[in-house]
Image (cartoon, rainbow, N blue to C red):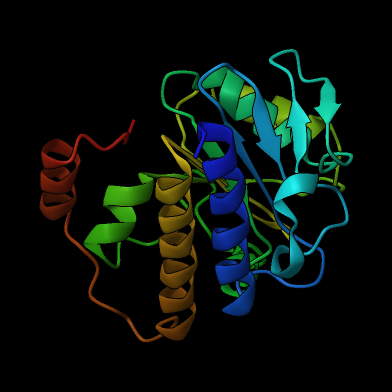
Length: 216
């Protein structure tokens, strides 16, 4: 099986898994994966993660132009910004409208520089700091500009009242990371007001050093 054929199947398989577990609903969410020749495979606009067709995924050239398949998601500015600002570290981008992550973004006392409290080691290992960005209308190119403004220093962001966006070296890593983001947001909601025991600064520093986490 060719690289492209395998990735087309992987996108649809992982998207359906996310959909079946309620991590995104309806026609929300989008995925992109970069091929070794610089092309992108992208989920089409208006498509459901539960019913993707590998043959109809959008195929974009290195210049971002559609060269095959259906029209790509309107959230391409998000994806393009990660590929541009983190070229050596981004092989895939996943964007969801996951419930607990969105709920956490709506609270008034969230740290915009790092929206997830240090509840578990794995959220730090897989995500580093998650930047909370302001609300943008879906499809607004300004979302991409906001990510470019981070100068490649964040692999994961949360769009307020919208959903998380995670980039990683490959599709599997991006999916695992965004799942960890949602689970940590769920823990944050469940323990809110209960004075949970957070990881100490020393414990965080050990994780950052041991697993080469981006934490600046």
